[in-house]
Length: 288
Image 1 (cartoon, one colour):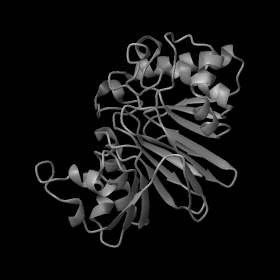
Image 2 (cartoon, rainbow, N blue to C red):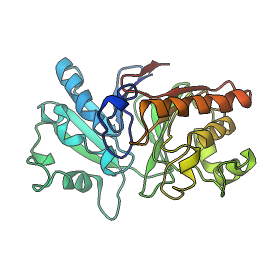
Image 3 (cartoon, rainbow, N blue to C red):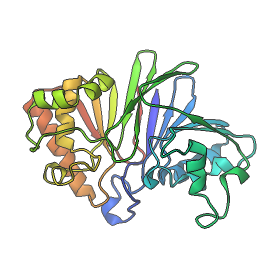
């Protein structure tokens, strides 16, 4: 299994000198199974750059795009995804019904005439739309996708993707539940997030929302995002092998994300944990 980050930022793209190291594009991850089936996790602004890469190679004709939810930072790359404009491509979007609207209608709405000059139905590729729901398992040719309801302000799905003995969990825009203090004990974190712990348990890689730090997370309670320190303790409880910080605050500079990474590593050192922690950045690719 192989995956690569094309967008790591939350809320809005933030290009500039302060975001060069980790990137300023919003969420998009390329995932390939061992038989090279292409899966895309979320369709933020990073999807545009990835689409240019795909168009230059011309190899991938069948593409599956799993959309965690429909906040703009997770779908804004779709109108600029070049493979949608190539005849012969087959692109399938997976998402859930939200606010009474099915995935096709929701994605089409952002390409209505007042917002974009081309409708999604006018693109040259063959597009299809499939509804998914939380707490289900979807089996494909050589892998499976399990779904889970994230704790977010808008209905959001997390994905656990398994191929053989390899497992990756994508859990963006998820608020790990806390009491009134960031210093909630491990037992409290387990009690308040038991189902989430079980969902990610034992995975090889956990890509997780780390929008806030210790200072800001309490002030943003209920906003649907997590703190990197809480994430560290959560990962220990779930016995994951590697965690990847993701969905960075648009106000966080590269140096601030460096601090987040160091603070997370300090927790693992303090708890004598062997979990490996990585801060995602555009271009980061991992084979496992």
